[in-house]
Length: 127
Image 1: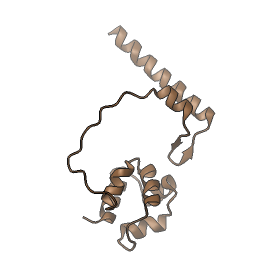
Image 2: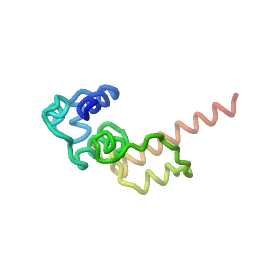
Image 3: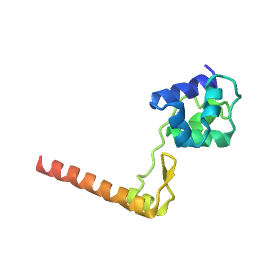
């Protein structure tokens, strides 16, 4: 299977049109269409990074599909310590669907998560 087939499959799996992927990634719809039709070569690592963000897939996976990285074969799960999401939200520049979040946006997300987990915690306590 060629890169363009895999890109199209990933886009469709996520339920995006070419236009939606263009909006989410910042890569032109014309270029995406040319890629998916096999009329362009493998995109640069910089374009793959944009696709990674637009499709919400790992950059290394796209780099591997494109042939920039060798296949690791068996995927090993890396155990790591959990990330404090509240601190992560506060201390990082974040983007969602191609939109950079402002401090107000991040505060709103934090409040929504606090509410969500408060409700879940109280449901479990009542059970």
